[in-house]
Image (cartoon, rainbow, N blue to C red; front, side, top):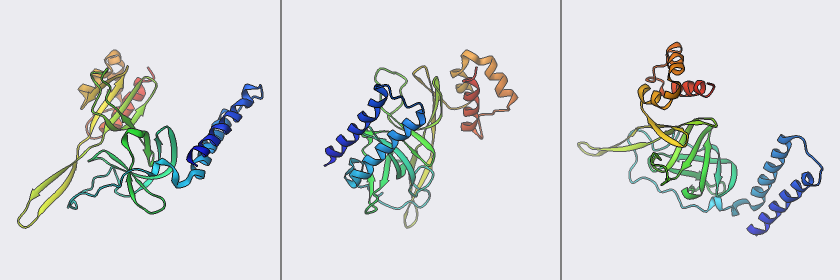
Length: 245
């Protein structure tokens, strides 16, 4: 049944594009995109819970509750998101991201089970407007970072700014119990000309834009960018300007 509905979708797409091929032009690009999106959503609605999106393993709880903090990106509750999974786009999926284990969790719509989406099948996803990419290790790129989910903070045709969101567990033995706390540590990368540059401060950032150092230094000084208290925001502002030069 799954394959039959897939064939229906493909046939509909072929029929749709055959109009353009036969000279019956559809001038509104947004109309074409909306039509394709509607067909894909029809496909998802038709196959319902048979979609392989819902076939991941159950999310495993941690051995003991945390006394301080939680393991998730931003909120520990499920929020609406979009995921590109195994070549298909799924909208309005209830998601949250465990950044200790680097696992994307989905709430099953029928029984409220928490499922791990299979990482190898995830291309990208967004949660409440925050976009993430699944970066795999590229042996041909020496600077390629560790594989995993990366938060995309800025993107243009020539340059991107990514954050690796990570949390760690710290256990401390107290008088009569074990205290389990979660602390956060982010790392950042600028991707330029296919190379990943690790950045931590103004100095390391400037090394990635040294081809336009003069203009960038002037912009940074005029806008009083310190790359300290608001590091992410300052990098985004600087890259937006760099992309205009």
